Image (cartoon, rainbow, N blue to C red; front, side):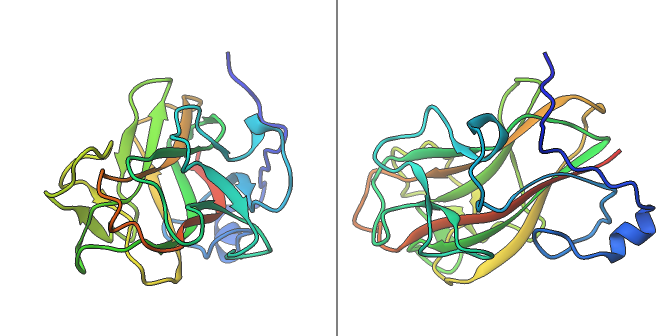
Length: 221
């Protein structure tokens, strides 16, 4: 059964004109998007199935929650952590609704990371962005800006894979990025999730955590 989102927004403007207009969410990356289908700025309350929401298998403690302590736009963002630390062995997902795919689909988002890394290029904890097509396996997607770190070989007990690329680090700046999902048929049911994973060692779990804001789903039809 396909679910239509009541909050879907379609543009009827020509692509060239649409590409020149500022987005309601993050700054406009390439490629030029033809249709903006959904946007969640985390400012308005929505029914669970229509907005971002924590996944049912998220670890507790350590689930995602909304916060007014840090936001890219407006007053509110999604946050993983308690402001000073975060629990070990967490596997916490933040889910989008299901969408009708285009010939190519994109998820655009802003993120802020205050996660203590091991080095400039390695970490034991971090976030991945994953996609699911027609209820199949979840697949990790590399952000357009690239992964900031890889999970080091000392990782133990994490639900993320050793050597996997992640978003992590403590530069404490907001970044705009997006992931691209190809190899789908138009109107395939697709869903995305932000998944944060930690290993067993909590001695390194220092920082205000991870923040997500201004999430937008766009397609090329």
